[in-house]
Image (cartoon, rainbow, N blue to C red; front, side):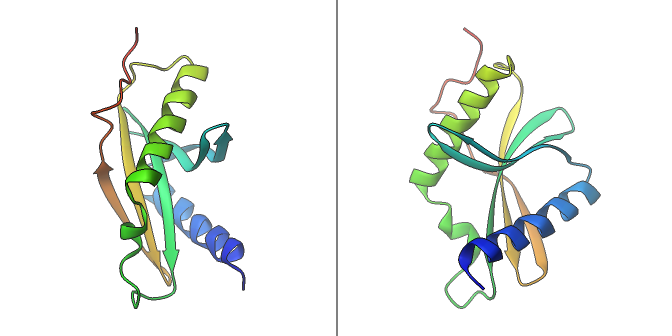
Amino acid sequence: MNTRTKGNLGEDLAVKFLKKQGYKIVESNYTCQFGEIDIIAKHQNYYVFLEVKSRNSTDFGLPRYAVNVRKQQTIITCAKWWLSRNELMGSPVRFDVVEVVGNDVNVITNAFSANYVHLAKK
């Protein structure tokens, strides 16, 4: 099984899990000129930008550690673009990471912050 197929399976598991947790999926695999966001959802009063990382095991560490600073910056930039294009700048946002190890799913809420990026309306 190639990595893209594994990634798709992980994202499918993540979506099912998130829906059970009350997340409303707004968009999946959003791409723009700056990169990609795996899942965009609405949860409570937040727009949540989620990165899904899947592994078969934790032999090489937890999936969350693959979401490095560069990946975080890409997600934040894409989120800013998405918010702007949808006229939602100034909305409350959150950045979560979904870890999928085998069939186990774990959501890390507020996994990282965009404090250093201006997301408010001008």
